[in-house]
Image 1 (spheres, rainbow, N blue to C red):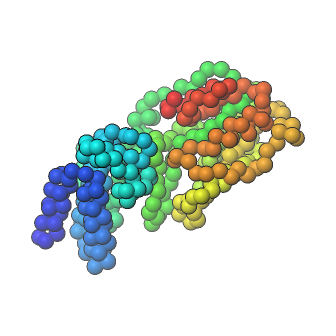
Image 2: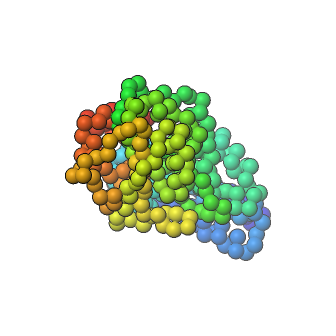
Length: 317
């Protein structure tokens, strides 16, 4: 009975909250309460009542952040007033703010269904779990649409696919909640082979955990792996289930008899550059590729911006 009273009181506080600050406090209290209940050996449904409050507070905070007028990255209008607060002042980072806004993207019907279906499951309610559900919903919608690549033939293809991550059993932390993702099957089925000229070079980004998937894609697209470059992310602390990964791989693959770069245009295989917005790659890579292959007809797949001298394809441009 005591738990039910606290649960109802917390739900009311979330509904009546006027700022992200209030919701963050509710969220942190719920998380501390969840941990205490679990340590005390309470039943899963009791522990999950606290988890539910945490998720509801995050979702409501995400609604505030989404509706607020953006002033510049990391800032928002507080209660429609004139005071502008940064994420730092709120005690949250960009990733946390982004996750909460993604929580707000979950349709209410699906969110309530997720709560109902998992309330009695041990550790059944979590931010990662809710965002995985959203990712699955988005992926399901994308699969109903046929992905059409641009027409033409290119002798150089630069691709940064939105890989789907798999969560390790018993692990908690990041998931594929930062952008719409594609399954390995969907990426492999893209008709990139038809986009490639008879002789073509492919630069393909992938992270270490998905290296095996990348080779499957390379084969499906009709290329052969030749070598790789490594982007070392400076001034950052990476995430990972076994080690904190602070690098990404740029695989270089070949189709046909495409020539290698001249000795003078061959770069170092290691790129040192700061971590950028989630999944955004270093701009210097474009210059490196252009120096390696100055005269090739180039296209970037899954591009974020248009680049002079390149064709670009992606849902962000």
